[in-house]
Length: 228
Image (tube, rainbow, N blue to C red; front, side):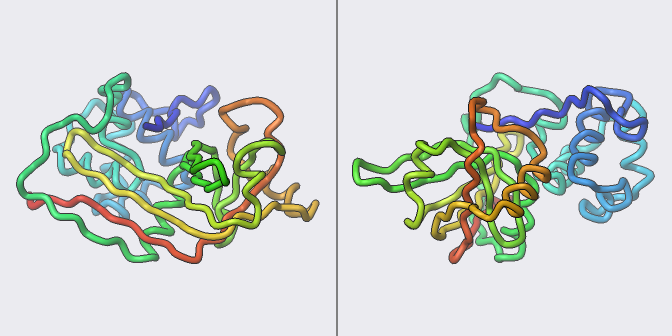
């Protein structure tokens, strides 16, 4: 399960926060380029309340944390710092569960909230699924790999890309799946723009400078919901 890195070694005053919850909330909000007012509108809260959570010791209600975490595209535990080492998905299922399809617009929004996903390719010797750092470039999902990597060797074939969010606190979550053809990014200007836009180097390290892109032709998602 992917984890988000919230600690910014050089935070701004607004993003610094005063508590662990405040720092994590502020760092994720800042990483998404959201003001406190914009985050408040997304989760149905007032911008002043977001500021209070970031700057003071507070114990927001569980449903409030759920709405804020969902608006930020993370899990409740990501905000609170709880269970960083815990294996995800082992909480008890709830009885009031429904699996709801996501509209394409919501799928695209959720794709923009993450930075790590899974790319699945289908070479002759069997399917391969690997995690990659990615970014959204227009309608494309772009990522870097090695020239000899599984994805690079699958250029011109159909591939799948998936992200998800699992929250053990609420026994809920969502997933988004994009399917399309893999292509290499060869235009020097496009490569330069992607490299400049990428928020970080690939976590896997090494000479991963070969940009690939997947243009979704099918985009779908599902969310587990509960009656409160």
